[in-house]
Image (cartoon, rainbow, N blue to C red):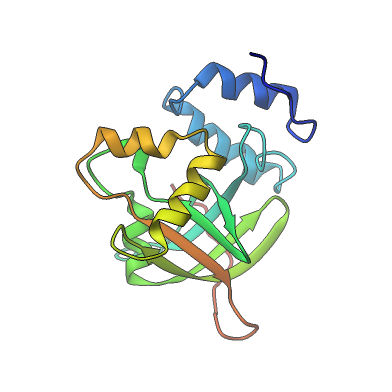
Length: 176
């Protein structure tokens, strides 16, 4: 059965997403994606991997340095939702620890920049099954595969745009 192409997704993105199947691809792909997203000011990167992606800017909990991660996201009303899957690894991604220390984050969604407040959603939370279904629908059921690879619960993070003046976040500093 042939999957109908979404005209909003560039052909290269459909090709890459089909090529990678359910994996994240080679290790350089996430780094290259983040680099491309940043260097093109969001003109490329939002949908280039065939799924919607944003840049999450957090502040290092120990270093105080701004950190950036390119992540697949889903929408739950006005909230942006990401999964702290770490590709099914046994440890939480570093950015999740940064959010635990400071829930104030900055997002770049395509060319739009916004400040947001993050809320970590764990498997025991009533919203978790619904948000996980949203994320799986967006990302070709990869999160179910990642959950099968690890015994660690995979937290989700829901981020809502902060009210004007309620969050003070400085401009991001280049960091890995």
